[in-house]
Length: 140
Image (cartoon, rainbow, N blue to C red; front, top):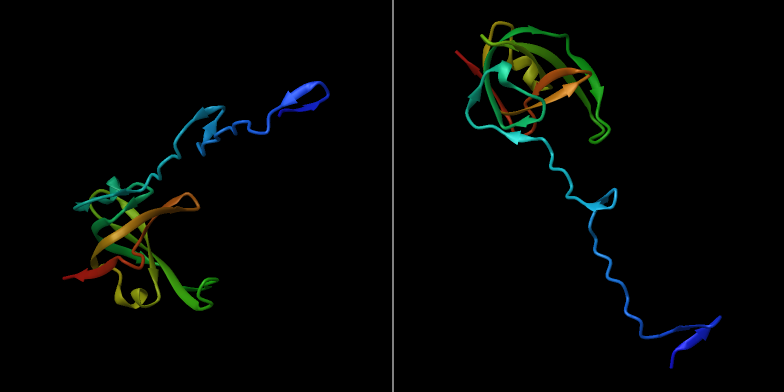
């Protein structure tokens, strides 16, 4: 038997609305945008590097290395050393971040091969990072 409230009848067995979990943008459904990261196969030139690229392989010559500075990691609670090197090939230059033991491995005028690196932007400048899964190899 329907209930009456203020002259209107309501049924207890009313169908519930089915709310789908779709994202809406101004009332229209849309899908979440994909990240811009793109994996790259093969070796690249420095001028071809763009922010967001992953799995980058680059060969170049170390032109200069900055003085190492100490930074404290909030995640591991350890003190790390970081230095910025400039690496160049025939097409251009890019900054390369070196951490801890990588700083002593390289010297100015060394030719290096970076495998599985990634490109980021820090304070408006592109940086090539080696990361946990990348490798830095000194070529003869």
